Image (cartoon, rainbow, N blue to C red; front, side, top):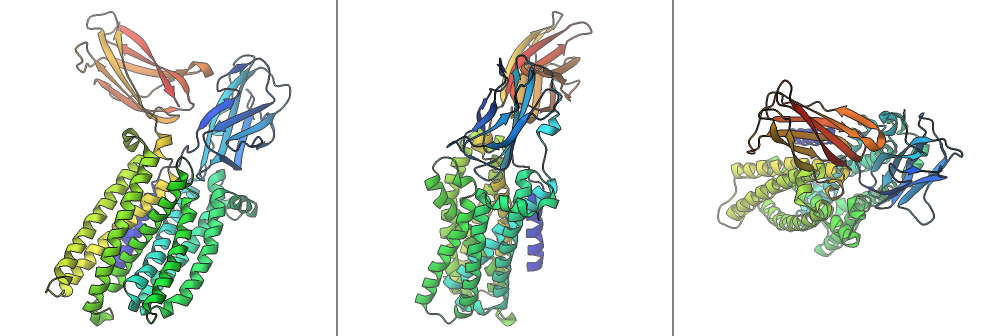
Length: 562
């Protein structure tokens, strides 16, 4: 049974990470110099981009292209003195007239790569031959998937080490002699070490958009260690050395140790666990943005409580709830351990709910962002998983109250029922861990969310039954892939079928377009499709409605894409 549970948990984690979307903008642009779309009389000596938070230049770039596509930047991009939220690069002298394209790629404060582009013109705007592929070169999908898997495995390894060791110290000291438990703790520690090394090796290619061939590049690795996340990973490896030494010394002595010694060991273990948890908190979302002084310790508590709960559950399922005749503990020992862990698990759930609620408010902000962003939707799925875990935990507490507080004695059938319930908790918890790894890699909803464009515009083709309105919806109104939905209604506000409706988008400031939109829904009142909008700016959505063979008109709607 446990082998099947392990396979299911591994499959859930792999699938969740494999289908995870690529992380997009975490740091966002506040201003550029020259301004986006600005026409300047004389060529500037430098260009710069200012963000809403400090950014790192390791694996970063600020490239400037002439109208013909040639590079015109000189030297390496730098931070102006005392301005870690700004990057700038010098330009060649004697730039000619025309439109220049600036592409930027930096590492945001929460350790994720962000990129984008803008244009400015010298003298007058012109056409440009710079391709979209040049501006938005995507990294290796394989690197992204492996990177996500490694981060998920690291969470799992942490939970096994912290939760299983804590379970032995606080609930079941005799279990320290179980080879199964020893193997579990050793495997968790090894998984965390291997996953940390893997993340350290993959971080550089992930940040720089390189392929797998650069994983073992020593120059890339040295640069990675200089980043915020690289430093945290190096600290984690040092702490794991201390944890490994402590485990090798402690495990053989737990069963015979006094209560005072076990309390002291638990205190030291808690400090090491908090230190490991801090290597996640300091390098990810909790370490940037508002209220960092409060967010960091709460995130450390959140990760540690997760590890104690999940690791303890694994011990319960794989080692504690085994028949005495098969080498497992007798019913009395089992009952005491389950009762103590139940109280600890309830405390962990309380910590997870409280700290998770705060972090959700901090990262999401609005109800619209909860459903309108990748981060928000992942959070909803995680909340569903946690709710199911709490429900299963409640059933386990009912079982405990029935068999351990009353006169009834749990037989093998009852123990098997608890084992199945707790095993399902482990599988669900593995799925929650996978979602957590994806949340760490996703842009916070508060910064990623943009309210969709929603407007209604009247039209009149001049013919019979030629009056009505088009209701236009564009979401998420950000550069990239957007959903465009157009509905035709008559003057009474009822859906109206028209012979034909087409739409295009143009960006006059860049002389881009009109770009035709491939809309489905011909023969109905609803037209919809996914539009690839390459650049931010003030676009014009032109909708042409034909109400008869000869009667048609075009209405234009401004759409601001951020």
